[in-house]
Length: 107
Image (cartoon, rainbow, N blue to C red; front, top):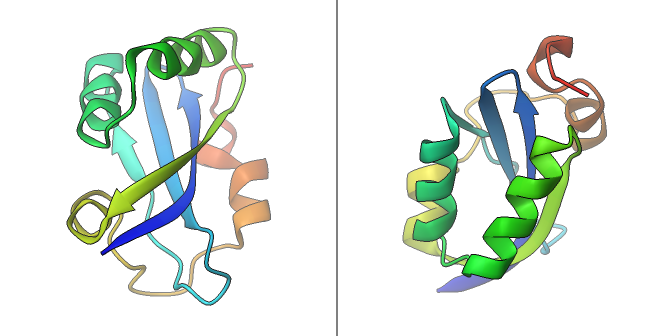
C-alpha cells in the first residue's frame, strides 16, 4: 500500500538527516533517517524513486545550506525500512525542523 507524504532533508556538516511526514494527519510519527555522506543520501533518494531532475534540485538546495522539501509517494516497505515508527516521544515536527542535528547544521 502506498502513501503520499513529504521528505524534508537538512545537511549537518557532511551528514544529512531525512525525515518523512505522512499526508495523513492521523499517521504516527516516524524516525528520521541519517545519511553519513552524500552518496548515502543519493542512494536513499534513488531507492525512494526520486527522478534525476528532482535529485539534482535537492542536492543544489543542500549545497547552498538550505532545507530541501519534496512530496513523495512511498510503499509500506520503504516507509518501514527507512523511516520506522517512533519508539518513544519525539519532538514535534516544527521543533525538530527548527533544531535539526542539535544546532550543528551548516547554513
